[in-house]
Length: 212
Ligand SMILES: Nc1ncnc2c1ncn2[C@@H]1O[C@H](COP(=O)(O)OP(=O)(O)OP(=O)(O)O)[C@@H](O)[C@H]1O
Ligand SMILES: O=P(O)(O)OC[C@H]1O[C@H](OP(=O)(O)OP(=O)(O)O)[C@H](O)[C@@H]1O
Image (tube, rainbow, N blue to C red):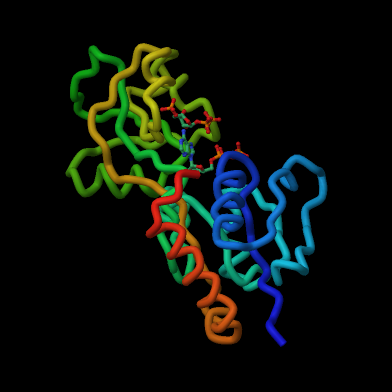
């Protein structure tokens, strides 16, 4: 008998794209479960159970093994550095991590950088040999240079609309972001057949270039 796969699914912008990818791979997954208040969703027909999580917590559930697999942005993986396997690049929720400032920004001796990703930002500026003070914020990061909290920010850019509407410029891009399929190390061995079958089905859809 095939084992049920416990899947940590991020609520929010990734959910719809990820569930569309699963459906394209032939799995009967509902479109709108993230709009209910229910957090654990049994999906017996798909051989799965969804755990609806805050995106940043997905690697934690997977590392601890309460979820066998999960879907998460590369940004979160780079920031959290959890002990999980990264199995597949799903190619969805594409954007980039960038350094952003007001157009009149100039390099100073010691500058302040605001971000939701303090580990990513600290590592980047260390590698660049730049001394900066990193301030952690939890959202609306673009506010920081506008109101004088920071000289630069490290944040995600997709369409560039947020930057344009706030008169900010992208100084440089640090890395590209897409969502990834991750697995718990023990689950990957114990439920290998189920996980491998899912990876193969998803890979086929990704290779076919389905527009989700
Ligand atoms: N503008 C964007 N375009 C494309 N992908 C994005 C964009 N912003 C975020 N993402 C991707 O989607 C993931 C989840 O983003 P989302 O905004 O849903 O979550 P969050 O801001 O962490 O959650 P919450 O709003 O609950 O705090 C990010 O980790 C990133 O990989
Ligand atoms: O280039 P764009 O298409 O404008 O997308 C980029 C914006 O999207 C994300 O914000 P999100 O919507 O997650 O809101 P947040 O500020 O609460 O993090 C990100 O932090 C940027 O602010």
